Length: 347
Ligand code: NDP
Image (cartoon, rainbow, N blue to C red; front, side):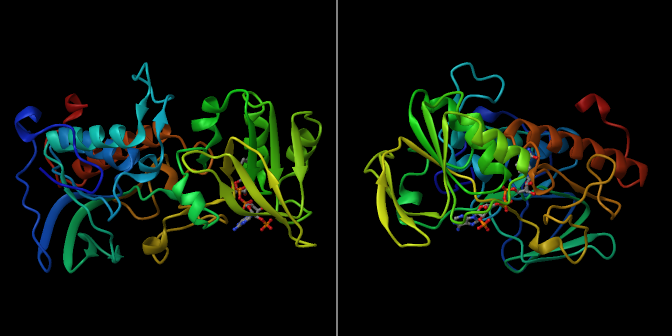
């Protein structure tokens, strides 16, 4: 069984039962691996793609990243992923998805990719000295929430510090909250959080906003939202949970404390596209551009999840995208004559 820090699969090989995929023949550093499909990324999109592709006998290789599991690894309770009546911990959900992918013969390597060459097939991907040659590729590298970079923020993540109001707002009923940021996400999250909170303080480091006027107007008209321009967060206070914020005025330097039970960081996302920018199109926000659902401008290279989706950004939408990409990849491989009989019954 693969070991991966803090992210142990919940099934043993014996519990998982027989696999229908190929043997786990990932070579060590310096080797070469040939496969029908490489999936890059191991969040809900990548692992769902792996489950589907493995069940279609594509014997996928997942390059899972050195910190596998994606954004849900930083989340505690997940209550909006269908099928879990009482909710599930983010890391547990990802461990289960990973075990499910392994059960059907997916080969996973917890490694970051160094570079890719998509100029011809097989596509080539290098990681830690190993060259992966793939007839098709699914890119599911996700996006990373940006953080303020405070030690206290890291320590209290999942204990009152969050980057997702949709995911975590429900846990803050009748509390006073803060949202940090001045873009559309911050205003949207502040407005959303008024469903639960008694009051939401929106803290922004400048006195003009990137957010659209309609979002600012809506927040300004909301009695529960108080907007604090020229306000920086210097520290998040609390030992085991968020109890307040240490703030400073970015014009005068004046310091003050604000008591809140939760802090939602909404200062933007960075899609993880660095390795692909020479090969694929990115939009004005830096996200990969998809054509015809999950396709890219290169035949045989597919895209799934938050690396292209800045609109929904949910685990369930990413998982659905991974499913679509796997089906598209499988049909494409068949159409090219690379794989044989249609395996639609495997879905
Ligand atoms: P943006 O980049 O638009 O805004 C980020 C905000 O965070 C800015 O106000 C920025 O401040 C602030 N910020 C960045 N870094 C720091 C920092 N280190 N400390 C304090 N503040 C910081 O990101 P969004 O996520 O808000 O939006 C991304 C895109 O998604 C936008 O194009 C947006 O329009 C779109 N979007 C649309 C929505 C909708 O239409 N419903 C909803 C959500 C997003 P500063 O302004 O000073 O740089």
